[in-house]
Length: 155
Image (cartoon, rainbow, N blue to C red):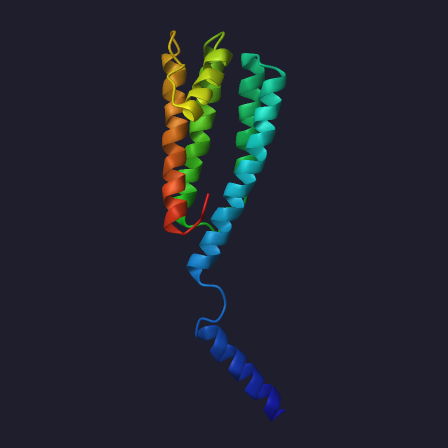
């Protein structure tokens, strides 16, 4: 009986003294989980968009991508990350709305995403609204990356 009391007391002291993962470790793992999932479903989003390059399909694919991201449990992520990531999702939603409103914007959207990789400005030709939406996607993701780096998450 005394042995059980000693064990329970020792375990209680260890737990109270901070043994186990720190809050920063919990945040880091949660951020990493969300970003890895985003990376995984981004590949799926891009593959679906490349099959049918209509504006309707692209907007639908983006909507599905956003829904999948919103399903993720971010309760263990720090509040600043949750806020930034939700802004990033919203920027994708805005892009889907823009694509639906401007006929023939699929090529401009793809050119814009390509220009992000190559550094070339391939979004000229009346794609101003879409270009703004794409810039917002990049801006919000840069904020997500900045916060992830604060928690030592390597992207």
